[in-house]
Image (cartoon, rainbow, N blue to C red):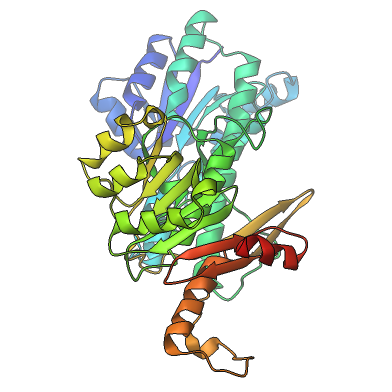
Length: 457
């Protein structure tokens, strides 16, 4: 039975109702600093952490819960008489429920101008220590790190005479350790970037991601899949895009949407459109406007474009929307940094497939503010391959002429356009272009001669 709870939260949403619910079940509430004040102000009976420890908060709050009266109360095994006798001998009260969320380190370092000292002060020490102690002793202690669990725990306590089930405590313990691991991964990444900027591949690599949604299914219909987001990534990308319309994306939809967006980012010089099918571009072009760019991209291979995923680098206008929903056109998804208000009904209502059409909106692609960074990773069984992202910008100075005739300045520019396309084609990769428009793609063949034949054909 839960008789005593320790509550210490930075994000105070929902905590008053949760504490009030605990109090109504006869639970004694112990709390720290600002949380204790809030609960007292709303009429919830509360003891301060200093009353529990017999020691004041010191060092500007750096030390307040790192005390045997806290960790002893959390870690003591209720099934061991020796442990319980030790608590009684030292006057330590058992703590049966811990509710903690950590200092807002993620929000703090999301500010690109944050001072190092401020970031350091927002590294929580006492919170993770308590969470780990409570989670370790989950046989007896309930630990909460997520406000979405408050009402579920209260309901279970009401149904079970003030107790939670072992199944719930185990689930919450696993969640708690995942939470502290994620938190520590953000700190490690920030300090590594700040103190060791040249250390690309540390001996121990910690990567933290948060799930943002489930996929309709995985690479195959019998596989389950989910999408996770990298913390603090401000780059316009599929993971950060907002879905405005359409059914859920599948695993393969996300892969193709990512390929389309990353390819269209290559062309900041003007309106550009990219159509991806099965991971490869089948249409890429630059045009006078988005509608023209789309038409030219589709002309490259209208058969393969059918059922593909389209990305453009400027707002979808109503003219572009009419072209996208034109004769013999069908797309699974459209990704753009914006959609004109008048374009939305054209995309979603003018064709039967419009009801399911996924519309993904990203941040503007025109100024990425140096945000393109991070790793490119590939999972292998039992490990992970990690490399730098291929963000190299090819220039005329980086080209070596191996033919007898020097290319003209215009031919060099066309070659650079083709180069930006072919880096997104699966090997063996061939891209044929003319007038900033793809006219042939040969992708994924074991024989490069066959890739050339496909591109020419």
